[in-house]
Length: 609
Picture 1 (cartoon, rainbow, N blue to C red):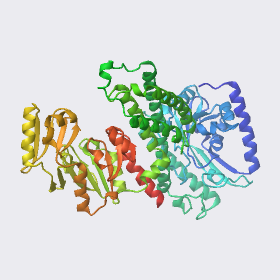
Picture 2: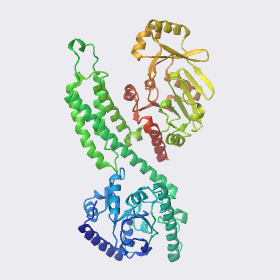
Picture 3: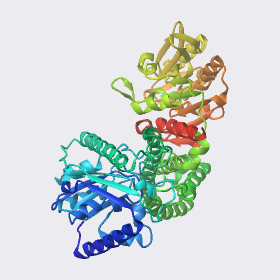
Picture 4: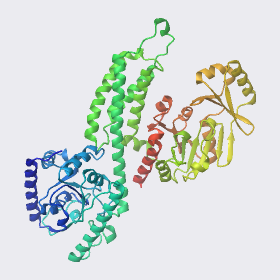
């Protein structure tokens, strides 16, 4: 990014108009520290953000050194008719607050070229009018460009125009204090440099409070523009930061939405290409009747989910609406082509084929995208359940402890969510101390896909396989040369693990497996007399809880038994029958899908309060 002569001339013209405007308003501008602004060479000027006029006030001291500041400014400003053209003509830098990589490198280029780059490192207006938490971008830009950071603090801008208040452009003698602080060079440790920057700016703003009161007297109690700790009506720093975290969470969600849409677009494009250009090789005519085609209802489900994305994905989007709309237009075109190809190719799509798997994957991704839209999350996650159930494989561990984000999410939803039920296809892989020590919830266990229920050190229920049936199974397995590894609880056989597929094992065992549950597992097929649903019913009965008090995060074979009895959120990696029938879909375990749902519940519950 380069600045030309025209941009400098235009910018200086705007500055002169601004000076006339300030003079007419009668504001009392108090500046200090102008010697801290370098007269030449690049620097990153970091300014605290309390009002919408900060971009003007932040340039006052640099102007005394005949310098102009090029600000990083949210991209939405550049999209305002007329304003955007003026911002570009002055050489300011648009920032996508969801994905700021391009603006980062533009800022580095300008600073290296000898310009002053202005950054509001707090990311948004501080409603508390104190120095809020800062992003590390300013420190990283300065270090990458090899230039100093010049902190600058402003007090009084919020009296003119700030978030949640009417603008006050009537001529007044409102005092505005601005001070440029001593420059410093970042070390390369962005977190430490940002902490030091915030410390200096906090000291600086407190100094300005003192200067204000020395000249104009004690700040009036209860006024909106006075910080809470000085007796004012502004929210405390903690209150303001809590509100800002909600905004950050929404930006995070929108960034993922955009990434998900891009992934869906690529998936659909690839699958459509296979439909149109690489028709799945048809079996010989003699074999056609033996090959199972994809069920019409499955194809209809795929189409419905693709359509849902087209209809709903733009709802509730703010920061990234333009980019999401751009991607959605591309997705719509790809979906239309895929729908047309599906209509003409449906008879050539066979169950289990790579093409079917590609279509199911696209539909699953569509369900995930729609499930994460604001209106859907509000509908699905407004209430925190009393009981949470999750497969052990969906719990992330690091250094022998639960993933910190999941642990925090579980703490947030407690005590409303007072019980965590951890399910597993076999015996538990992690002991109670590993999981229970990290969370406030009471921990229950469902092991061997429902055959054993535990609470703490107590075995609450055992659903063993009848001894006579075990003997029949052993005989059938021996005849079919099928190896089965058995698990016991006390004196009872509770589960068997057979190598093969569910259909193959069921065929080998024949009538001996009648009435048993056979579920796929990474190690083979788990054979039990009970289901996870039956075991969950035991847990709920002991808790004196109803089915509607429970939420199941489903991700494994066997979880489909919950569909008609409990609220189910499917992980995106769940078997397709689970994904099809779940209330909603969330990310996989390694993408913190469970934590994201719990965070949404906590956030929506707080909004109710």
